[in-house]
Length: 117
Length: 113
Image 1 (cartoon, chains in turn brown, red):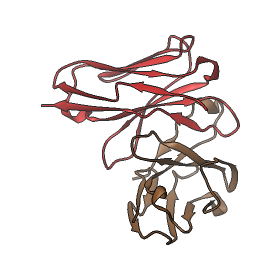
Image 2 (cartoon, one colour):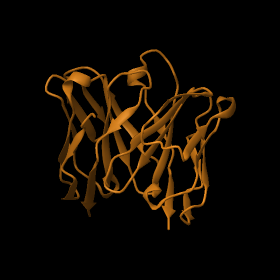
Image 3 (cartoon, one colour):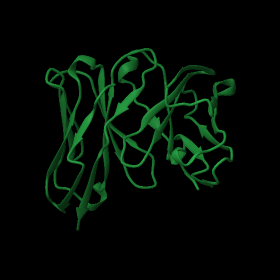
Image 4 (cartoon, chains in turn brown, orange):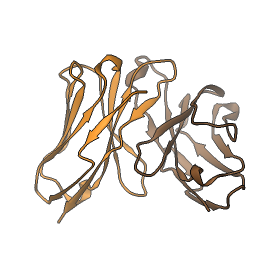
């Protein structure tokens, strides 16, 4: 399967613990996005990478959140000192960067579902 | 804050029924509209990307139309099958340097055999 993969698929943690998620985008896709979906809502944008550069962070991304994309390949999203409000589905997506960027498809992974107890 | 609205929130139909959902968005912020199908425990699957007013796209029994002037898109499913059961999400690309998508809350479709 050459789609976007995410690990782990599920994570249960206790409040105050740190967690890290990984996203492997489609090979040669330059853009990588993280979104978060909470119960009853649509996915919401968190952050965006163009190759290894993190170009934008949403105000949803508090100081406890950090994302990296070393070497412009896989990406990690870390949440420090987790809170119950962090419980959500974390989705990763990737896209190429051809001409006509606003109509390019973002290809999503299956997500990591986080539950903070 | 952009508001992308989807209706209905959920829908139950019988196998063989045809159905449609609505996605509305602010027409002044339009660059592209995306439709996704998201089955439980799977990745959201891209259905259509629409950019032009009056655009119509079709994929098998699923089709979509776009009206950018009034700010809405319809998704139609003809002859629904149980495997069509999923959440259907629309997402607006409103320009800007980050190409982010602003999603609606989705329409949950259940097709009963």
